[in-house]
Length: 308
Ligand code: NAD
Ligand code: UDP
Image 1 (cartoon, rainbow, N blue to C red):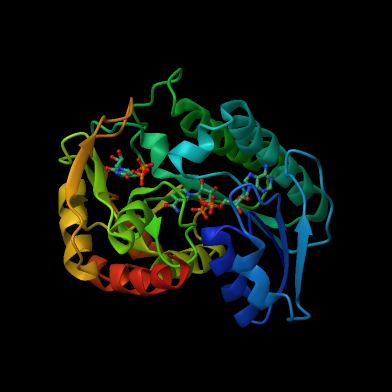
Image 2: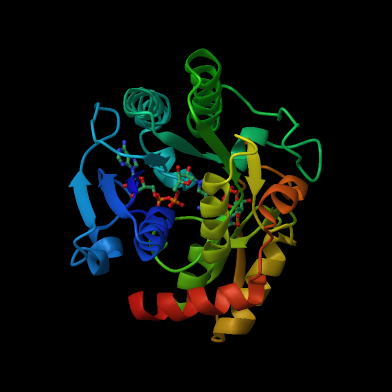
């Protein structure tokens, strides 16, 4: 198949491009390199089945493709809040452009949605049926509401135009090729520990997240895109739940060194807890994460050692 991946030079996108090429597909990767890097796909550029296009998905694009994976959007809070209006345009106008293309060329189209659609969840763990608890006017809203609106667009195109959609809600995922300055917690802690700097916990560190290793997530993407039973939304993530204090302590144990834990103010609307209910993914995809946090962190640390 010929497959378009938007955001293909980012962290998840580059792993996805690599996987799709290994499976024998042609891949067109489009990315404006806002948070992505050419280096993430440099090893793919020799492959005649791979094509990189520098392009912003807010502007329309046309390719004859069989499938579209829409991943373009900054995912780390400091980056998506840097230019919030641009972030929401990327989610909403970018989704419209992907859906318009999918309609024209009759492609199956995938949306990388997020656990952020659940906001600061009152239901725990979060099943797909939960509608969420999202602040529509806060600092995180450009991302959360942009992704919620993109889901709405995907389902309206599905109902109105019978578009073949797939919507995945991704929970915190980490691994090699996250940018060292990405700003998300796993890369921050590892980079800080490797540099011998103090690990910055926002708030008291009792808030929780569930961390999925990138290879597990990409396997879930491909299985979800291949099946025809459901269009989603489907949660993908690792149900293992950790406090930020536990994550910091584990990182320090694995990296070693002299770093201490320090506390910084908790950002507004930071969700208290998050953990995916993956019953649906287990049943439909026969999928569940294989890489435990400690093992995944070791692999990520090995990568960041080469970057720091
Ligand atoms: P990332 O920031 O590494 O990747 C995003 C990519 O999109 C980057 O390469 C960036 O340059 C590109 N991009 C941003 N705006 C663009 C635009 N307007 N036009 C073209 N390209 C643009 O982040 P990631 O972790 O790889 O996330 C990929 C997708 O998965 C995002 O849509 C994100 O919302 C979603 N997601 C990720 C996670 C996670 O934990 N990694 C969790 C939930 C959802
Ligand atoms: N966090 C932290 N220190 C950091 C970066 C993040 O304690 O250096 C916290 C953050 O406040 C949040 C959690 O870690 O409670 C996960 O943050 P991240 O930005 O990785 O993802 P998200 O909040 O979008 O789940």
